[in-house]
Image 1: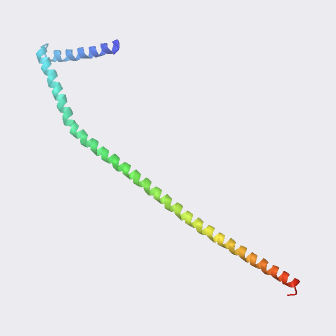
Image 2 (image 1 turned 45 degrees about the vertical axis):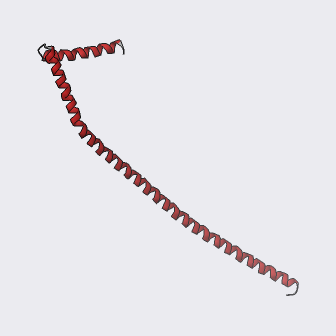
Image 3 (image 1 turned 180 degrees about the vertical axis):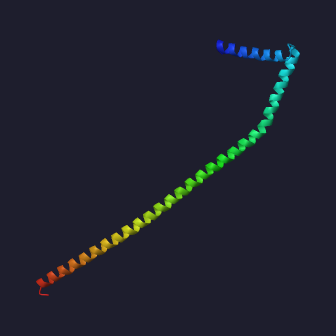
Length: 129
C-alpha cells in the first residue's frame, strides 16, 4: 500500500477511535463496549436483511428466467413459422415448376408428333403414297 493510502487509513482509524472515546466521555472501557455494541447491532441488521434479500434475489431470478423463457419460446415460434412459410413457398414453387415442366414436355411431344407426321407425309409422297 502506498504511503498516502496508509495515511488515509490511519486518519480514518484515529477518527473512529476519537469518535468512540468522545462519546464515552474519555473512558476507554466504555468506548470499547460501545464499539462492540455497534458491531453487534450492525451484524444483527445484516443477518435480518439477508433473508429478505435472498427472497428478493430469488424472485428477481425467477422473473429473469421467465422472461428468458418467453424470449426463447417466441424465438422458437418465429423459427417454426418461418420454416412453415418456407415449406409452403417451396411446395408452391415445386408445383409451379412441375406444371411448367409438364406443359413444356407436352408442347415438345406435340411438336415432335406434328413434325413426325409431316415427315411421314413427305416420305410417303416420294414413294407414291
